[in-house]
Image (cartoon, rainbow, N blue to C red):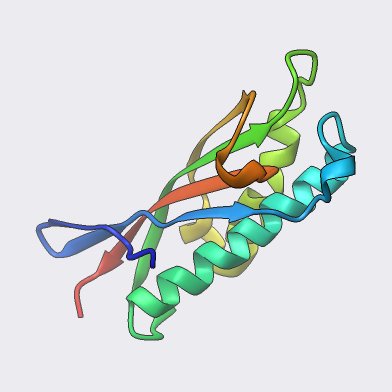
Amino acid sequence: TWRPGHRRYSSVTAIWPPSRARWAPTQWWIPWPTLMGAEAARRCGLSLIAQARAALGGDLGRVVRVVRLGGFVNSTADFTDQPKVANGASELLAQVFGDAGKHARSAVGVPCLPLGVAVEVDAIVAVRSA
């Protein structure tokens, strides 16, 4: 069972839950349409929000800001739209958290992800102490 990592920095806690989307069936292996990848990343974002909510005892109001998002896209060497795929998670976090959801981000292509997932997204989220 995954448990979120916690680090204390004065009165702020950072949570960085990884999230994976095994959304695309095997026959849609890369290259697959960028919009499907963005949807997979969006679903990762929903999972990140759910994991943060659980780690915060249900109180997403404690989120100070999403600091950083990392997007890993299972792709071939000729696929170059990883940033467009990662936008699925980035845009969701901005919609949910407003200005606090604006973040730094990296989006990279990798030849393989654990369990054959299409997209993996991790986040560092600054939160107020309880």
